Length: 522
Image (cartoon, rainbow, N blue to C red; front, side, top):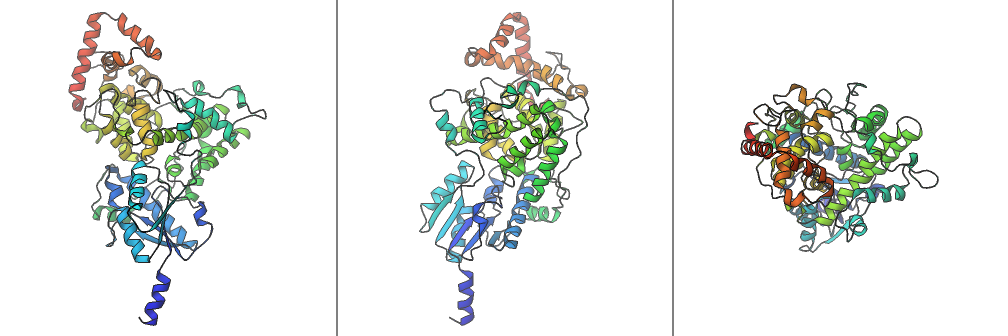
């Protein structure tokens, strides 16, 4: 071997490979506190991850672009990085196969990774490690405020895993919004009743504070590589942060311009203001550019300094400290198998307009088209427009889960699956939600303006002009009376149904059957 070859080999080799997944873009992880020439950080764009469901183009672009920026930052900080692009000729398009090839390439004896947040990847990497002569180790991602099994331990033996008990415990654990005696500030744990106002049009929706990126070249590469997607890529004007610096600026802008009004209008909907006062931080949080505790403390500081009301801040804290950690606990306690639950036996396929927005129901038209254009919809649009319709119509919850997982920029299975199958579709039999979240047109009319320009009338129950939500609402409860009739939270609904004249019940159910048999034409 020549001297030059020996020199090349010595500098080329590495003792350890450290895998970084596309949702592990946290520059503050302890891994990065010091440089080690014997450690190579590996990031990879693979068809395994782009193709397991059909993804929105913006989701693929935003993750790839953020991964590339993270690799650039690591190199600038003095770390060794191997970035496997989607078109790399050595790319096996599989995380395990790439890892094995790279370990051989570098002569590495150890492969490390941070705990994946999706059961699918966790199981894949664990199974792969058992077949390798390498030393494989797993470390914490250092992101979440609870361990995977905290919720399961806390809720052991309970039939329903109510979030409120968990939330109060978390407030005490992290001393958020507590007074000097450890009691909730303002005397209440929960201000949800104060946060249900329709938006009257003022104050105005803030200007979009997110950065604007041109990813046209990356999009062309993705297309050339054969990756399939749907939705508008917005490749030359993508509004999602690339890195922690941009995410912190988004956090600051949210707290300044939107948090003061978030609470009042967090459940409101408007065709004129799709973002309203929501934070748009979920993508940055879920790929770990931001840590949840710093976000929570920033919001609390806004209240303590008089820049945001307590009800608004508590509502925001409950979403992150309570709900976000809670659904992650549900996910890890119930997987594998949670994704196949279908307690209500719903099997209808998704109508074609889930992929186009071409429906005459104005609320669904607006929200689905917005989702296709921006890869985002806020929680009430997801739950009480799309999810509400899907549940009452009897759409297949597994198909709906795959759609939600693909279309939304912030959708990773650990957070999306419990929200879809549990909270939205009641497919887990009520483990998360004490009752199904369904409503007639009256709720949509009260909380938004979608009904104003609709081909259907929100007060009509049957007939060609009737809003489909009305007949579907009553038919849903009639179809599932055996399962839901004993639920004390639904007692009033079933009393109302039983008081209806038989001919009215028949008319509602007949109209609902017609709707369910003709979903594509609605």
